[in-house]
Amino acid sequence: MRIALLTEGGYPYARGEGGAWCDRLVRGLGHHDFDVYALSRSSRTEAGGRVEPPPHVRLVRAERLWGEPPAAARGTARGTGRSTGHGSAHGGGRTVRRARRAAFLRHYTDFAVALAGGAALSANGGRAADGGLEGRARADRFAAGLYGLAEVAAQYGALPELLRGEDALAVLESACRAPGVRPLLGDIVVTELLTAAALLERQLRPLSAPWYGPAELGAADVCHAVSGGPAALPGLLAKRFSGTPLIVTEYTVRVREALLAHRAAGLAPAVRALLGDYQRLLAGETYRQAALVTPGSTHVRRWQERTGARRERMRTVHPGIDAARFARAGEAAEAAAPAAPADPTLAWVGRVAPAKDLIALLHAFRAIRREEPRARLRIFHLPDTDERSTAYLGHCRTLAAQLFPYEAAGPHAVGESPVVFEEVGSPGAPELADAYTAGDVVLLSSSAEGFPLSVVEAMFCGRATVSTDVGAVREVIGGTGLVVPPRNPKALAAAALDLLRGPERAARLGAAARERALTLFTVGRCVDAFRESYLEVVAHHPVRRESLWDAAGDPRPFTAPPESVSPTRLAPTPAPAVRVPPAAAAVAEEPALAVAPGGGQR
Image (cartoon, rainbow, N blue to C red; front, side, top):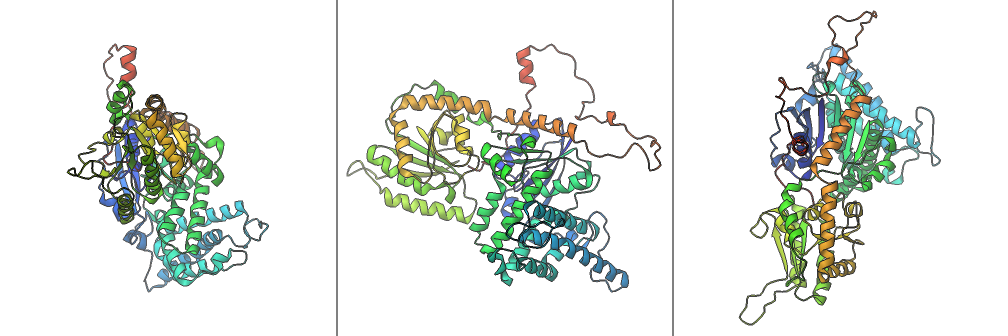
């Protein structure tokens, strides 16, 4: 089987868990062929380098959602290599430009009206009660505009220039000032229109990618997009123009992530409204067209259902995490006898960001110190990825120094703080498992979270956890840890004190957590689920190949019948028959897995 893997900000770039789980999936399905189509969100994505793909990855294509568009997208029609006639003085060039402009205006008007949601009539004349477009009519208008723009890119090229041109600005402004739109959009100014048009051009850049020929996405048996955002655009076009079925996997809510990113970037409210509606409409179209949607948790599943995903086409697949990295720590936790710690230690592990709410963690630890003066807090953070994380980490260090001044046991002893900040990979925690085992209890203090990777890794290490009730935390933990409300330092402190003072209870919870993690969140379970999903989707949604009959209704000579296409790659020579015990055979059938370098998003 040939699988087109569509990524955004992840694989094959060596940054975060978004790339690591894809690498484990690809290596676990070595009997299939993979083509990787990667979108990079920023220069930082490419700066981290790439993971070396295994041999069965046939090709890797990359496109940027930042910077200037590629020259090919600006000047030539996709897949044809012919000039678009831009700048030509002869009559044929003028004819091409007029046809291109007319087609662009027609489709971009549909696109912009759908984004603004004004009172313009839909194709069937439907209106909402408030005068705006009905939900389904708006979605249909958006889809018509989106696929029409893809056809403009395929036939004429130069779509990025058109999306940033004066015609696009005029259409977008007209749609925002139409009757029935929100007052927020009706007051949009020119600078905000310019910003929105530039950002929309970057989001729509995959429409101009040279990936849709019969030798690339048109030859894939299935497209697998790892988000409902721009990564799904190539899959939508492959389904529409080649009939290739689409699978969409999301371990976080892409729409919500985009909205938070727009707010963090300081975009104007009108710009955020346009981009937010684009993300919602794109996600809805992706879910409607997908043959299968695989959320990583029930939390994500609920968001997807609200955005338009159909239950009968959904299957929850938890992300696969490499348990071997934490096997030694988990076995040691099981073998250790529960005892009250001499120096009660709490551990926090993850990537520093405002959503992790380390401020609440420090205030909770202050309450813990009043009850347990010997308690210590060790904060293990992954390497900083941007200036915002660095600034937030500095702010937390300053607050910790104010709340917990240096203390010394005597007049001749060196003072030290009960709160220590350490980077994973330093002598205090050379491996990620060492960070989790450094604490008697592991804490998660986030105010917002998707899939809590750090909690799962702590469970693999056999550690009891106290977590805030955000995202998929409750679903992941089950009954194997304590859950408290977010932004409540008192509740977080009380739960942590209960486990520090009850080592037997903490040990029981840690053992139960490890068993749950080994049952639900291993790489093997994830790979098996996707192997079954690929086969099921291809069986029910076969790709349209060349017809066995010609236009006259006569059979084509030398046409390969469907029976000649094998869904898997067969070995050239059969292996010799060897008698293997049943237990050993079960182990031998497990796929060989590898781990991508770099830590995950925790």
